[in-house]
Length: 383
Figure 1 (cartoon, rainbow, N blue to C red):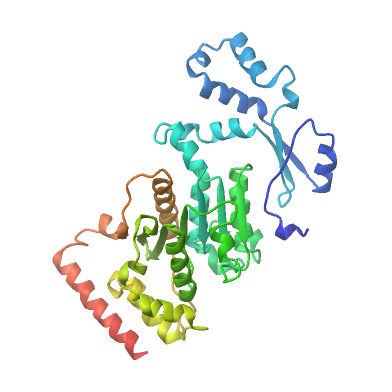
Figure 2 (cartoon, rainbow, N blue to C red):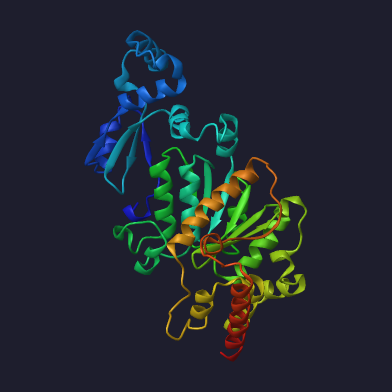
C-alpha cells in the first residue's frame, strides 16, 4: 500500500513478538514513550483525593492493580506510518478517560460515553475538515465517515488547518490522519470519490448507520440526493455555510418528521426533477443556490465577491475564521443530537459582525445592507 493512501494508526502491543518487525516495516524513525507520565495523570483522574497525598505506596498499588508489576509491557504502541513515528499510549478505556478528563463535568462521563458511540457522516472537507477535527478534540463520535473527491491545493490552506507537506494529498486522507493523531483508537471510513449514486447507501448505512449527516459539499444535485436519502433514512442533516467571518446554520430534523427540503426553499417536485436530470446547467445552479441560501444572507463583501466569480475571482471566498467557527458549532450540534437533547429544525445565523461591530443591527445599517442586497441580486441577473 502506498504511503499516500495510509491514514490509520497501527496498534501493536508491547508484548507482541512482531513489534520490532512492524516498526521496521513502517520505517519508524522516532519512538515517544511517556507512559509513566500518562499513568501519573490517570492516577490523578481516577483517584483525585488520594493523589493529593503523594503517597508512593498508594500510587504503586494503583499501578500494579491496573497493569501488574512490569509496566514496560503495559499499554499499546500506536504507529503512524506517514510520520515514521510511534507513540506508546494507554489501553483504549484509559486513553479515552484521560483524553476526556478535562471535559467533565461540562460533559458528564455518561454523556461522553454516549457521544463516543455516535456515528457522524461529513460530506465535504473544507468546512467539514474543521468539524471532524473538533469532534475528535472533544472526544466524541468514535465512528466518522468522511467523503471528498478532491486533493489539497495551496489555495485551500487559508481555511484548512494542515501542512504544506500535504499538498496534493487527498483531503479525506488528511482529515482521517488528523483524527487518528488525536485518537488512535478511532474508527474512520473514507470515501475518496466523494459521494456518488454507487456509494451513498454505504455512506448512510452499512454496519454503522449514520446518526447525523453534515452536508458541506458544493454540488447541488448531490445536496438534493443527500436530503432525499436522509429523509428516507430519518437522518438529521446539518449544513453550515460560511459567510465572511460569520456562518449560517441549517438544521433539518428528518429524524423528527420534517419532510420539506431546505426548509421548503426548494419545491419537492423541482427537487426530484433536478435529481433525475443528468446534470444542472450553471445558470440554473446559481439561481437555485441563491434561492436556497437567500440573497439577504450574504454580508456585503461576500456579495461583491460572488458577482466577480469567473471574472476577477476564480472561486468564492472563504475564511479560516468562519471555518473554525463552523467546526465548533458543528461539533456542538452533533453532540446535542446524539445525546437526544432539544434541537429544532430551522436556520440560524451566527454573526461575529453583529456581535462586535457597533450599530451593526441599527436601523441605518440594516437599511444599507438591504439596499446592497437588492443591488447584488440585480447584478447577478445581468450576468
